Picture 1 (cartoon, rainbow, N blue to C red):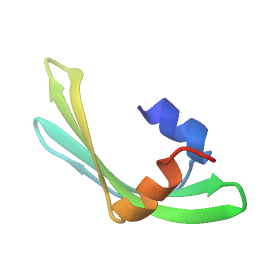
Picture 2 (cartoon, rainbow, N blue to C red):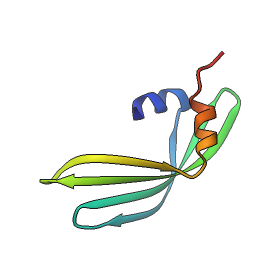
Picture 3 (cartoon, rainbow, N blue to C red):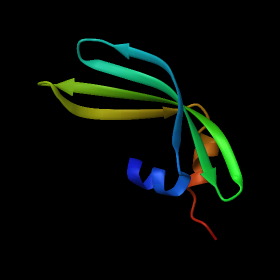
Length: 77
């Protein structure tokens, strides 16, 4: 899924705002710059990672503005 988002948005990491970690979960709060045609936006995102047996088990993603994300990910045409 992240590859598809990267292909559609040409996303680039602008800033790591915060890093949080615990015994089972960690999170990154980031700002990404997205491009689509002439349009460019900054997207605030939080990635939450769950680790089991020292391996990545799951990842959840939370976007501050889901409407902008949906607009960027809808099919061209």
